[in-house]
Each structure stands twice: as C-alpha cells, then as structure tokens.
Image (cartoon, rainbow, N blue to C red; front, side, top):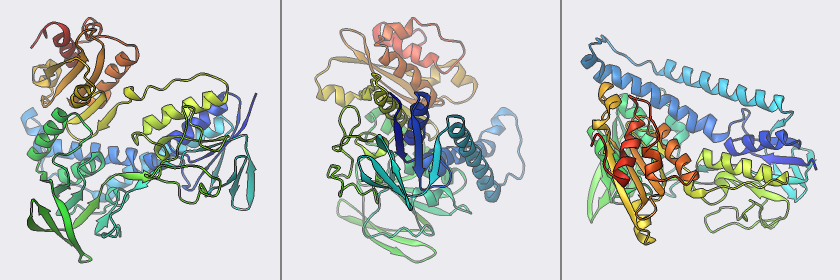
Length: 459
C-alpha cells in the first residue's frame, strides 16, 4: 500500500531514500535547510574535497613528475580563483542532477528547516505536513573544541578549508583522521607547510596498522610534519595567525601558523528536530537509537546515516536509505555492516573493508595475511605509481575473505572487488582464479589472493 513519506535531509541518505521510496510507489516530500540538495557530502564535503584533491594532484604532478616523462612545463602557476570557480561549477551540475531526479520521480523538495511535531506530523514554516512515515537523515556537523572558536578566517572547519582564496604558508591540522589528511594534502601540494597534531600515537587509528604506518610514511615524504601523542595545551588567535602550545610527554613546543583546521571528527546533526519532546531516545554520543529496521523509539519515525551509530560514510547512508525504503514497502532488505568500505583520498589512496588484523586477533579468528606490492605490478610500474600494496586477510581454514587493506593508486576503486567478493562469500582462491585484465592495478589483488592460498605468481 502506497504511503505518504516525509524525509528530513537531502544528503546521500535522504535523497537516495526519497528516490527509492518514490520508485516503489510512495508519495515523497524531502525537506532540507540547504537550497541545493546533496547535503554536506555534495555542498561542503565529499565532492568539493575530491575536486580539490584532483586539481592539486594534477598541479603536483606537473611540478614534480612530468619531467621524468619527457614533458616540460615552464612557469607553472596556480589560479586559486579559477580553482574555486571550477569546483563551484561541478557542485552546481551535480545539484541540478539531483533536482532533475526529484522532478523525474515526482518528489517534492522544500528548502526549509523542519520540526517533528509527532509521529505523523512535521512542521515546515507555517505548514504542517502529514506523514505515514518520517525519516530523519540530517547528517552530521564538525565536532569543535571548547577552547578554540572557529571563525573560518584563521581557525577553520572543513567547510572553511575548502573555500580558501589563497594558499597559506603554514597550516596546523588538529586531528589525524581522514578529513584532515585529505585537506592537508590539498594545500600541502599547492605549497603550504602542513603540521598534523594527533593525540594518539598514530594517524587514522581505525585503519589496519599496516595501512596507517604506510600512509604516515608516504605523507611524511610529501612534507607533512606529524606531532603524534601530542596535545594542544593553549591556543591564541592573533587574527592573521595562530599560536599553539603543544605538549608531548611533558615537553612543550610553540607552533606559529597562518591557519588552523579543526578536524577531530563529526557529531550527529539533530538540532531543532524536537527529539526530546517527542521522546526519541539517543545515545550519550547524540546518536539516534534505532532497531534493525531503522525505526526509532517512536513508532513510524525512522533514522539513517550519520545521525545513527556506525561509520559516518555517505555510501553507508545510501545503503541504509534503500533498506528503510524497501522495508516501508513491505520488502526484505539486508545490510552487512562488515562489508562497508572506507577510503582516504590522499595520494596514495587508502581503502579498507572488513576485519583488520587486530580485530581478528581479538576475536580469536584464525586467519592468513597475504600481501602483494604495487612495485611488482606492471601497470603501476608503467605509470610510475608503485607506492603501496594490497593486503588480503582470509580465513586460515576455509579461505573465506575476511578483509582487505589497500594503499596505492586507485585503492578506492579497487576495494569494491573485494567488498563484492566478501558479499558473495568468496575465498581467496575464488579471486585468484578469476581472470583479471592485463596490465591493470587490479592484478595486485589477484596476486595477493594467490599468496593467500598458494604462492603469488609474480611475487
């Protein structure tokens, strides 16, 4: 039976959910405070950062790599105004694409803020919308530090770091996670000296330790300066620069920089939704509690994406969006959270799916780790992109693929093969005996798989 569905949030979770709900015959309204659908991902996150990463990587290649290919570039310059202009054009085109999909699927889009009145009503301005089901997909916002105010001039959030109109001479990034390392890569390639301040003893602590170490080494070679196991004790904003007092193991150091990027993670964005008054339960971290069908503690109200527990990833939100849309239409939909890949879009790229070695060890699961370096991959050799490796984790007894960890060119694309293999419960031998085109980077996965049950052919 067709339902009247109201979705709050037009990011990857919200707009994908809207499209799938409409495809299944429901009447759908989407509400978002941003005038352009796409959420943080499109407007100030995934897409603009990848655009700037691409542009800065091309600049870096022209400055440092073209000569060895026999290509001479003289008087190389960077036009920041044009850099930002072409970024805006990409975002406009993608936003128009989502608006076209809304129109194609008869989805009503309202640019406004929303407040949930009860399980069947949402207030938008002076209008009260009735709904058979309400889906919260309002995403997340940057986490802040209590003693450092973000002014988007000297102290930046990820949003401000994407919109700089010049290349700073120095930038300090507080936090050694995905977002900070990606934005540090953008401005570092363009000439900034990048300092990364991380309280833990390694960057990207959620990744397999081999990947974290390899990424650390690669970025250090690119000029990153890492301050690990380090705390920011005091901070001074001098309006045109910043002064940080760092402490590590009782020793202090003063760091003066032009810009500071606060990149210590994100928190669920639930402000103004009226959750407390309608008795929707949340965790101490602010995540909305849901059951296996993404229904909150109030019947008829659902939540997906960054506002619930789990990795804050656009593609995770999209899968949850489809699952809840199909559930509301009486269909069964399954989501395996162990097969959700994660990617860091630095250079080299880093991608991971499934278990890490420490997780397998903690769970007492017998496994075999097999590696293959891109330095032995013919395509990587031909393109002078030999940094990194493929690491495959398979069950010691059954050979089932349990996880994969890749650092190297195209890692974010390559990881999909392993994710699909895991979804289909494939073994390392299944991957190894699947014909891969030659010469391609994907052959490194094939070789790692061979090493997982026999021996690598080219190892």
